[in-house]
Length: 118
Image (cartoon, rainbow, N blue to C red; front, side, top):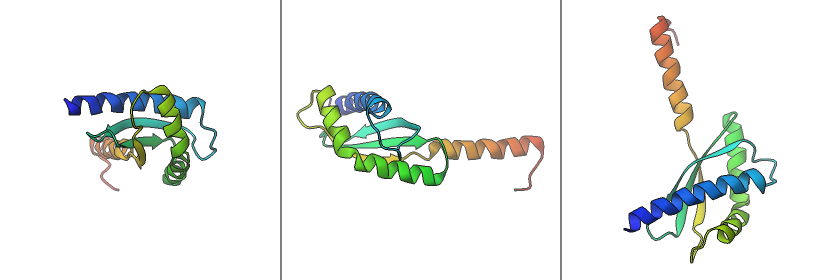
């Protein structure tokens, strides 16, 4: 039971965080951010927020710093939108799966075209 609830809360946090960042966050370090997923612990005390950014590696580091500095604001806004006894602590992690997928896709294209030189 608790596992299903944490998944539902994670999906709700993902939706609300995306909206808050899009409409309410004015930090210049946070640009084109996409919240990929949110994993919430079974006791609903902590949430790992996986995000991706359009741009380079340095952009992701700056965005992570911006999100971490706005963590208190984001939790406060989540508390207004989501009725929970305790709003989970937010831990932001850069999701490297998109970049990894692009890398694998480029390798496959090279193999298909016969260009094996890397």
